[in-house]
Image (cartoon, rainbow, N blue to C red; front, side):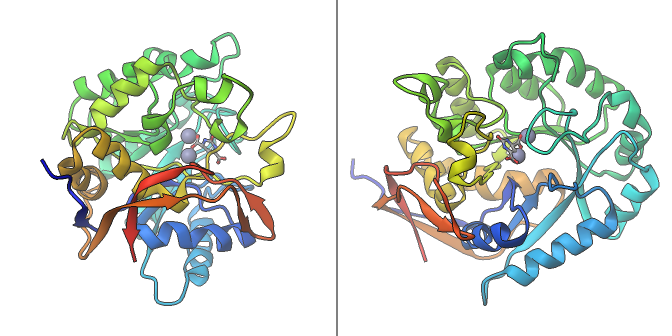
Length: 347
Ligand code: OTD
Ligand code: ZN
Ligand code: ZN
């Protein structure tokens, strides 16, 4: 059989990205906008994007930083805190400023210190979201120091998510950046209101990538990559054709010095070659015919948004990824640094 050389798909979206702010945002935005028509923009700035005014001005800063002639729509999210006001969140959703709201358990990941300390504190917000059809995006890890870091996602399902889904059966929930077979299983067996995003790195690396043969901080992100059996479960879910699993890169840039440090930041900057990286995974799995639905259909259907017009084409070709990129006057090491990816996005 001859190998497929190109694939053309409906223009995709990134359902989970960190665009940052200021010069960093100006430096990284073009990578996402080159590939994706829309992106769900995470609100974990400092201070967090926690009300309508903050989201509106953040959106304007993003639009102002877009490269000339690029059409790209940032979909804004609201960072939930213990003090979030149901009326403010409903107002932002009704006005089309907020597309979703984000639940960070306090201290689960980068800039989440002001996150939610107990789900019961935001029950009025969640009830209102359930009524209005506003999706809840969840960083699904417990933060209890007694729980091993590799178990924090599975324990989150047991202790929090399972009950949340039972208490609010009509709330749309995206279980973000899943990393375990337990999460795959949970999402598969839940009703149609529950979906998940999957990052390229969690389809490609297991925890050995971070720890074997030397400490490799550029593979460190949260939730941390797990054992090989989990990576395999995630791959199966991504290529399964189930509408519950869709693309979300979780691209999270940090300067080289902040990662290569005695206390390195969590986050993988995969935006430069994200779509190509996913294409390589689907190709390895002989599932290129499933890439379009994962990248361009299941996300908008779940969110209740129109599918994009237009297409992008990927070509089988060797793409050499640089060791580092100069962005915002500093250096950032991209995901796949120094490696070759087998697919190229045709401009
Ligand atoms: N994970 N880093 C970041 C966020 C994500 O949990 C996440 O969504 C970040 O730097 O903002 C990371 O490792
Ligand atoms: Zn997260
Ligand atoms: Zn993230």
